[in-house]
Length: 232
Image 1: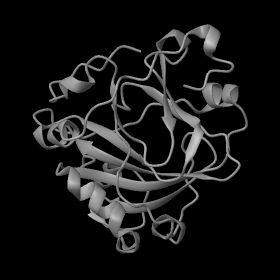
Image 2: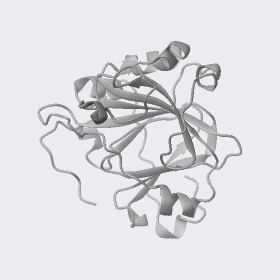
Image 3: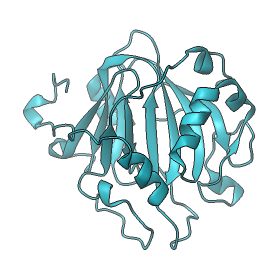
Image 4: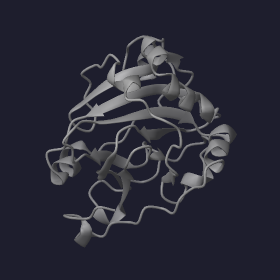
């Protein structure tokens, strides 16, 4: 799929691959901040449930902001956010305008082939986003230690030669243009994987937050021969 051409400001750091990986989160992550939240049965990229930390109107609503006539920016904290102060602070520390903030609870995947065939998807981050503003991308903070699981990213959904994989150990942090890259997580299990996903506006604030953390070497590109067994 070709890269969407718009007049929105986009981060140069994402030009080459559509994503960057950052060093792991250095703080303490307390499971009570995500295990005690209210989760909704909302499917995206597998057998998932979501706890909403910020929504368009501050309600427990996982839908896109466009349902309320708004771009995915200027999110309003929900009641869940008061139970997750560290996660709320992580979002605020970025300094950029944020929209949807959610915790994903992902059940173990059936197998990798199923993830690729059924769950790779693009997000709809920029509906109603004014073209004189920054492009909306998404950032992840992995909350559980899932070293054998990984995020699959593809420039072309049906071309494994365009694939990259991001490992998902505790505290993994990365930023992805999810309207450009097809993506889904392959989660080995046996327990659910939890991660925070936040929408951010591209601009100096997001770039500065990324620059304040040493960007690691890009995850190697998987070759077709690697795909059945590779665990980068």
